[in-house]
Image 1: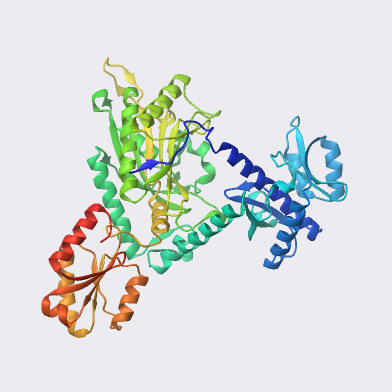
Image 2: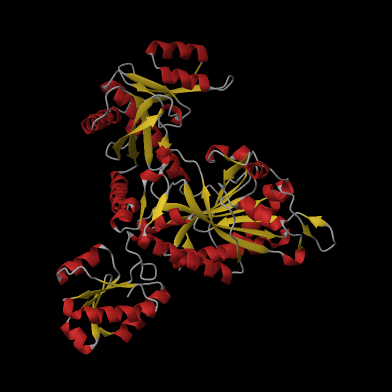
Length: 599
């Protein structure tokens, strides 16, 4: 049964205390790391050391690169600091006094951090140590009370990477040491094992090995080239997507890839999203912009005609390719790219239709996620942020509609207070993959902003002109990222219905090739994705190649199979299936594809 992950009805979940303790452990580990580095390498300057997912990092300015041997020494020193159980003290300081101390230490980054703290704000530092040894850094916290509260067997330093001060490529290049920290050694080992499994499933590695896609640097970073097998899977995903949307009452749109820059000024993207947009281009003395979003195009399509309340809701969906400027340092395979296709849809509806429309999206989302193999997900409901547009009444209406839809759906969810978009509240889903990782995926957002900016209307029952409610939603998020998640979830071993090649026929010798080709032709005509191994390799090598390429079904064709007009069939999942007639094989294939399982 598909279900959301167990969560409380608010952000005060049962795991809140555990999360808070992990935050303090990891934040304190970062300071212990910096203390150890400056103890071993006194010439090193420290910058910042925040907590990140599953761990922490600290950025250092040091002329010599850190080596793996250095990381070992740093870990040893960190354990010594932990076992010494040194006190950690929070101290409020005066600006001028602490500035003089920093200048004496010759720590330029600390000075810059101090200067960034606004006048009137409380300045705090955290000190580790006692009269024998002491280290400190400017920090808002929180931290543990003693270094001994960190389990010395519950942390590990993982890697060293390059980073720029303040993320600015024009500023100093630093060395970033990453670490992970947990309450117990068992939690650490579980994390490290999951990390090793994640390496095995890395979509970038599997994408190359299985010839699914590539990132061609000659064309520029962050641009995806879909190879024949990857393109086949994309076609299957898109075909599924279109059919499911048409069945759910959506209509399909196609919109341009660029538009006059004035459109993006009207939509507000130039004000709120400019840093994520590519530079505009001039066409006949007018500025045009590659689209970072599909939303304004759908609004213009709506505005092209005057609509009656009787027509609403209108559900319009598009597989629309968008372009966003991402720095090269954050590009990551299919997960973070510069050009990608969103499975976008927008619903224009009446205020009283919001709950039913949101519920319909939840039903459709559940169908999608189930069919693609995801049975558990975390649901967040994000409410009004401090910086937002729209009336209190509008926000209350939309938020209550989202809550009612989730309650009617029966999904557990967490309330993310103030986490909504500036233009409306939203529901976000994080899907859990085969090794327990969560991936941000589906989103449903209510928008007050664009309908007002573009002044779109409908004719109400009383003849007045009213503003419709606009709902944004994406189920996959983007085809590229979702495909990357699929690769890692299945470790490249796709279920039969999604596999680019479903069946490979393996002729023992050239004498059986003609029969193999005729069987392949019949299977192709019946709609199956089949190929014949024409390599001329020995049978053992053909079987091995099919295994490496993760072909779901292999069928050996030898003299006996030709004589009996049969196939010796092997399932990658279930092993040997024995000798089957072509019709028996097709029956089993058809059933597995319909159930989205494997034979």
